[in-house]
Image 1 (cartoon, rainbow, N blue to C red):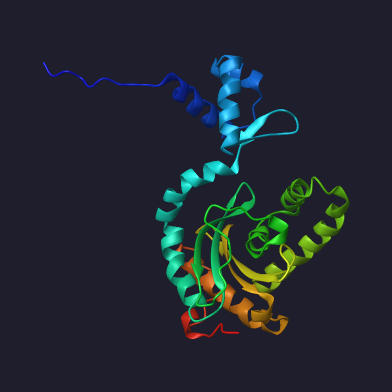
Image 2: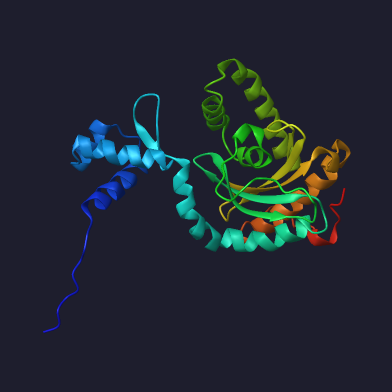
Length: 270
């Protein structure tokens, strides 16, 4: 009789995985973890402390734990194999070919944009952005584009969280954000004019899935000298056209037909 292979298990890793899985559902305190997962409090404390050091989890002001941005690194391999990345990549390459711009592709992760691809143009400047990096919703081209598919209540919730340390800026930021979202909804592209970093400008556009919902966005990042305000409309329309084509390849059928000219046949040089 053929022996069955033994199943090996490391108890500490089992407990760690169980905690991470539970945190994907809701925020938990050490007491919650002890009572729901039957993990001793002392063990839970050691595991949580280690996970926090690697930014895999974060401790909230209320003393509970939630997933941290570090877990995104584990999803990068999967994200790279997604249809979105493989479909968008050639469009992004054409978008920034022979330009000083850098193109980014972002997806909405818990209402925050996360870069899942990056394509650099031919300029000498290289921006220090990277795949897996999150961006503020209200201060990024990709964020404003994604926000165009969110409700005012959802936007307010995220902006308040982003400005939790500066409550006096929330009201003004919300007014500006709602104005930016209306611009995206009317013209199809977002503008970030040195709001996140001085000297850097971005223009973004939303991507829709088969169901018509905005779930991702693209953007170009540029030095302000290479993207003067006089070019906003030209480059913005090009971003919108590119995003529309990506959406179409993902199965989204807009009310109007897409323009016939390919994005790569238009110039984005400054």
